[in-house]
Amino acid sequence: MANVLYRLGRVFLHHDHPGQAWAEFQHGEAAANACGSALALAIIYANQAWAQAMMGHAEQAQTLLGQATETFARADVAGAPGWARFFNATDLSAMVGTVCTELALRVDPTYTRQAIPALTTALLGYGADMARSRSFNLSALATNHLLDGDIDQAAVIGTKAVEASEGLKSARTKDRMRPLKHQANQRAAHPEARELSERITAFFNTRIGCSWMPPTHDCTSPCHDAWCPPPAATAA
Image (cartoon, rainbow, N blue to C red):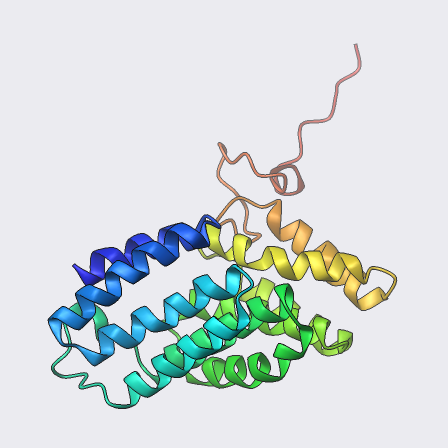
């Protein structure tokens, strides 16, 4: 039951309904306690923190992150439910970075001081099989550097985020990149920020999974004409 409630809460988070996500995660907390798994409970606490951060509740989010960290430290991975065993130290770092990014965007930009090292740690822990998670965290890290005023570094990492997202068949890569584009747009007077925004716009205009490769004949993405230009008009 904790697994179902966790996944339902994540759906609400991804659709920007943190209040509804919070309600599901609260039920998930009860279910995780009932099954006696500290690892499942740590996952729920971390996601509760995300929901609270999206609602702008910094104190509650920080408290829940602390609970997630403490609970994870005593978790028995081998004895945890199968659905929860994916969650490791890298995932915890990513959640800390994600929550603090939300707080930096919504509450106080100084939360970048917590977000940047946590996201950097998570990125160092991702293997080749975690391409989508890498994309998410690169986008968040670049956003934090923009908030921190380090536009050059943000441009470098933001470009890596776009490159990591090309070819991934996931609409969420674009959704998670929207805060980065918004922050880049706000700094469009800086050439590096403007170029990053333009690069993201070009990526947004490709079909999911297009990856800038020659499309099939039925591709409807805006890049289609670049690869398959319409035939030249013939003289009457």
